[in-house]
Image 1 (tube, rainbow, N blue to C red):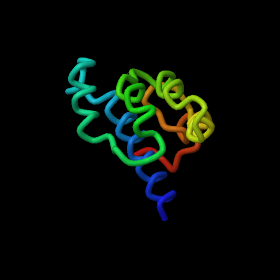
Image 2 (image 1 turned 90 degrees about the vertical axis):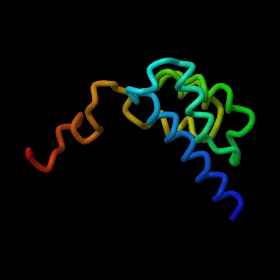
Image 3 (image 1 turned 120 degrees about the vertical axis):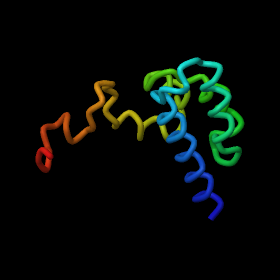
Length: 99
């Protein structure tokens, strides 16, 4: 059970980092780091060793670098790293239809 809680905590931390990257009200690096510290979990395999590196993430490549040599690096390498605002299905031409 402890492993599951740590994994979920790490996933939540990665999600907070990724979602805060493009949030318009967190334009300055100082504001972004302060807000992230409020929501980044202090439980899990990423804490405390990687918390400083995760707090300084600016883009997807730096997120991968912060997670280097962790089990999560391989999972994130499978995710598309484009920054054009389209999701993976749209990039592959798979859509349900236009609204």
